[in-house]
Image (tube, rainbow, N blue to C red; front, side, top):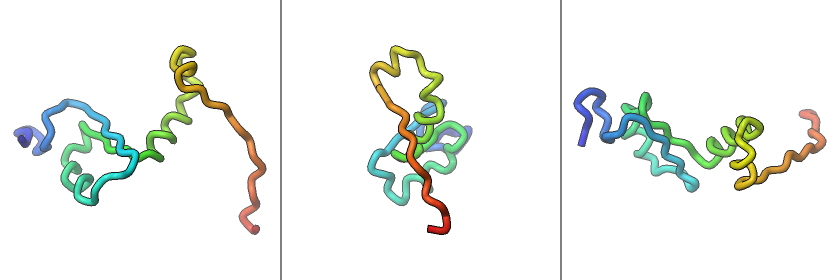
Length: 79
């Protein structure tokens, strides 16, 4: 059912939908009118945001989701 105020087909005020396997092509188009209240994230989006904020998470959450930072040698762009 479309929201009268926004034309959005969902009835929620805020939401995050994460699709580990991606979305069908029509989903982002259909939900584009909901951009102000609904976010669509891919696996890469979720992991990127997790890596950005991981250091700020409570230790309790880090214990449930232990990550280890690993440094590697960067290849030059000329290689």
